[in-house]
Amino acid sequence: MTWPANRPAGTRPTDAEAGIDITEGFTPFDQRDDIFTRAAWDPQVRSAKTDRFFASYRIEAAPRHGDGFRQRDFALRNAAWLVSDIVSNRGAADGRREGFQAPIADDTPVAPEPVPVDDPARMAAEIRRVARFFGADLCGITEFDPRWQYRSRVDSRDMSAAPNDLPPEVASVIVLGHEMDAGLVATYPSALAGAATGREYSHEAAVVMQLAAYIRNLGYTAVASMNDTGLVIPYALKAGLGEYARNQMVITPQFGPRLRFSKIYTSLPLAHDRPRRLGVARFCDICTKCADACPVKALPYGPPSDAAPNRSAIRGVRKWTSDAEKCFGFWASLASDCAICMRVCPFNRDFRKPRHRLWLRLALSPLRRVALWLDRRRGGRVKPADWWADPRG
Image 1: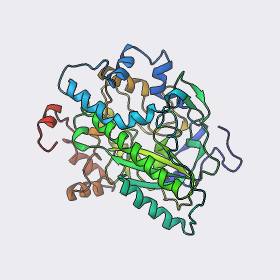
Image 2: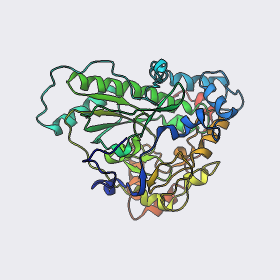
Image 3: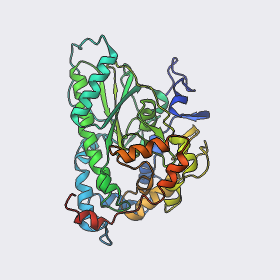
């Protein structure tokens, strides 16, 4: 991707507000280098374990040993992924794994007569309302930024690079947040817990497609997107949904790190939200619970850095960066995803409850060390068998 003349590769005024620190040598990320895609073509990553990891989602190689890794645990996890899988597989003949290595194809045309938009702020409020109606838990809006677009997407037939083009009229990105089930997250690491991830991918596929169809029916371009096309975390930060943390996640004041994100690229005239520095980074400066709990020590200690552990890390951004090769290697050994770092995060709380909102105020204040001390005994793992035995589900 080349930079348009009016879109320099350097910093922007709102970068600092979002906690984004661009350094020299910045290069947009190539999706072919993400760890999941590398597992299909890179002998440094691919192994019998990684092949078994992907096969387990088809019940072709599902280990049946231990609490949380029995057949019903894999069955629930894989069923939770079903809607997302249907969407991602429908363009396979053309090398388009929709929602992961290609944007989701339009299912409805753009109306020939666009609805006039005289007030972008009012339209933004309408989009948030419609997003909530379809089931999104959070919605923020920011400007389109080519720095966060993949330099190329991936042809899923042979894992080769493919053009990553968007309609030239795209000006805004709508970012949607989807809450993961707290009870399932508490059972990580387990195949059962993976159902929390799969359910939200299926939910977000439906939500993002419906909201994009609504916008196209208004007469404007709307490209539905999940993990494909661009990096969603910078967009979520710029859209004011939260702040980046040591565990590589966006911490939100509503759900902590317990979210999946999707996005829509659109030409609809919309007012943009402002980034928010909540105080999460200052808390992470004194907290290493996620790094301490990581079984393979894939998460960083110390301050943010622009060092890249391997080719699966973006270059030229100063931030906390995980070692994706170590992380995914552990996933492969489990034949399921791992989010221990999410489970143990002090911000993994239900902020609908007053006591947790009080804790949040402490954590985001100069009294953050008190908040960290109060959290010292939280984050323990719930046995998957106890989740199955709980009549509340």
